[in-house]
Image (tube, rainbow, N blue to C red; front, side, top):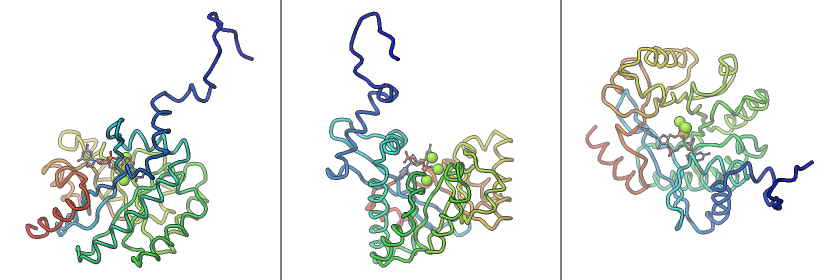
Length: 281
Ligand code: C2E
Ligand code: MG
Ligand code: MG
Ligand code: MG
């Protein structure tokens, strides 16, 4: 029962609307038109094999440029799209676009490059997700083992049983799963052993200070050894320096990704980077 406020003004905003910032509402409105107005683009960041030095895969990262609002970071608009439900349509566009790109790269003979796509927990919990992804792959004629889906630890918090079942269904279609931002979420190690996860991506917050923080070094080295024992690959995120790279190599980390190699690039620039990198490594 609403309290009359002193100024006797009409309360225009519902509590739910007030809870969202004006900015979030503005983004939500702008997002409604973003797909049809072709304001999204995917950028690709190389993931480098530390044993052979070759580029094994590319992570697709969503970019949004709005004519008035400018470029908006996915860290800002993805949560808005999740709250409004728009992430489902946007996520499907990301999957289709990434698989289409993968097909082109395969036809161009760009190594045996794989593409990794980030999946929101909301997409992951859609019952029809595994079939949707599988259909996109079949329609493009791409082998499912060239697609990686990056999940975050949060996907299994509420209902580990259903999450495990969904992972099994994705795996049965031949699709590989990675755990993104590993170490920052809520996953328990007892759950992790049950997950059919192919790769752990060590969060960049553990990599950043690796040169001078012995705790971070201990954590990273423990994650790598645990992953090895569980039969999982490891990818270090946010690698920016040669010293970080050398430590990771020493510890037996499988892959690295970060500005040390390249920032995320437009598809054409990625191809260019891939070819010149292949020649010099
Ligand atoms: P993420 O999946 O963990 O992606 C890695 C983020 O780290 C990217 O930020 C990337 O540009 C950035 N990064 C890469 N190397 C370095 C480095 O050496 N140093 C630093 N400081 N940063 C580095 P970005 O592109 O801004 O994406 C942020 C997050 O937004 C992603 O984190 C992911 O959670 C989400 N995201 C991006 N694209 C999508 C998408 O298509 N769907 C969904 N659901 N989420 C997405
Ligand atoms: Mg990711
Ligand atoms: Mg990450
Ligand atoms: Mg992240």
